[in-house]
Image 1: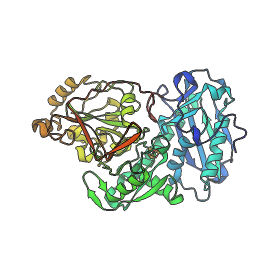
Image 2 (image 1 turned 90 degrees about the horizontal axis):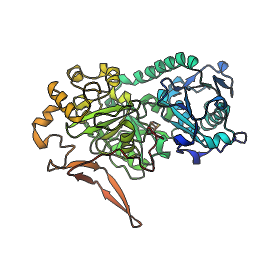
Image 3 (image 1 turned 135 degrees about the horizontal axis):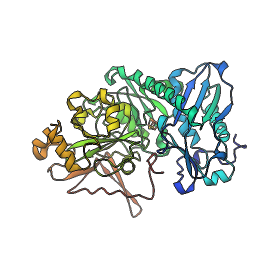
Image 4 (image 1 turned 180 degrees about the vertical axis):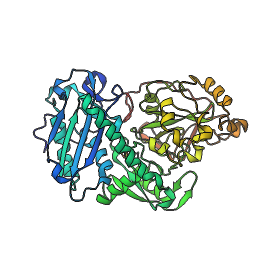
Length: 467
Ligand code: SF4
């Protein structure tokens, strides 16, 4: 199928990393403000099947080691192809392009970050035409309802600008659709296992009020995808019985998570960052991170380039959060989930949020209760935890009620004696020692003191900031 492509194409290359020193070029990523990928459904007579167009410099015309703007527009048609499917098909760009040897695609929508390796470039992968041909073949073969596909790669900044603005409007319209629906109103949630190739125990549970961590798949998208391909990576989850309405624990979700994670995840709290939080693969749009000194949460989105109030940047905390694990207090989230009434509901919602970047705070203004909006600090207000504590006191932040009640406050984050910080809890914690695999069932690990240091481990997680 891929004889004319100068590099290998296959599952074996999914999850490959291209480090900075090994990259020929970078497309999108943190240094480029306007980048996007989008799928649009069009009438069949407007699509020239197999057409690959390039607007702006092709890869061969790009300077080695530099970053460039990128827009990818995939237009599809088919008798059974509905606009509802756009979001789901769009997420497959990530999957299919990662099959290409030496081509690394991270994130989604307006956050895409692509690198091409020098090795693959030297083998002849010098044009977007090859990338488009691979994507065209895979879209047609893997999703047979798609009858026609044309793909346009845009690298010219002046052409990208208006299309980027148009793409943002389209994403917002998709997201807004699910906002009127509550989790209680539906019997079925949806699961997504697309990221298991990077994080094998990660299972996204997509509900009307808990948008997928990547911010790319809504409950409506899940329903449309499961409808056309029930055995595919996006599948229906019967809710079952509600065990805990506040935390968002359902028998059907627990059973599904256990089955899809091969027993590693047996319980999921949909609306809490403690106990059995939703797993995080690595392509989350942001992180909610616990700040034990003030018993509140900081929020940081992927694009924030500075260090946060705890002295750590997004990339370091992303390493700690990712990998399909359930980490108490480090919680992968999407922006749309932050617009939901269920946002960390069991932990106090926005009454527990103490810090976030100014840009994020302004972006979410209409979703943050007015009563707490002014009491949430940003990087413009404070630079350290002591400054944060003083700011919260001066603004009478509701989290202070947890301080007043002494060591019992924040029991969900502290061990029973109130002196030990809980550093990990999970359904099953696997340890490997001397050739044996030991599984601690329903374990909680606590420590008197936790020191978090920014280190660069040998193996990084999927989707983290520094590939
Ligand atoms: S983050 Fe979740 S919903 Fe998004 S592609 Fe990965 S598994 Fe699917």
